[in-house]
Image (cartoon, rainbow, N blue to C red; front, side):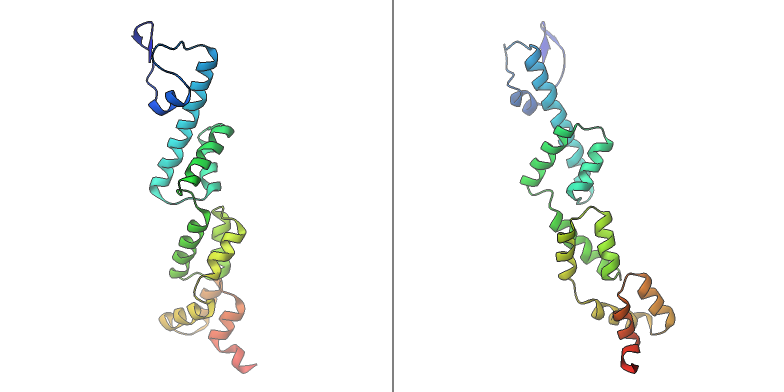
Length: 177
């Protein structure tokens, strides 16, 4: 942008267009406000897409990042809506991928639910993701085969969020009852 024939400021072209500015138009107070609003939205969108470059995040996780970076509420909401419409923010996809990764690392359903809750996944999406996993008892059985049966393994399973009934089942306590 030029001001009185001299370079004044560089602004993203999409923000300039959305603000309704063009060559030869005066930059009056309403146009400057519109440009400032569009620049805030562009900054929030840039922060969010930069965060998504590293890993998939939930809507709540992205919103927390935007709050920490000082994005305005309106800019946050609009940036998140744009990313959701584009398919870049999908809580169900995040929940499913995270649940499968945690199950593969030897965690039980309770620990997976707690982790998804900390990550900001909606409870319904978390339940759907956990329901799609291999049954907890089968995962526990496979872990016992790999680590060997014994009290240490059973305590380890309990500490990893496996249901006490599943631990009792693989330990053979249910057979003796």
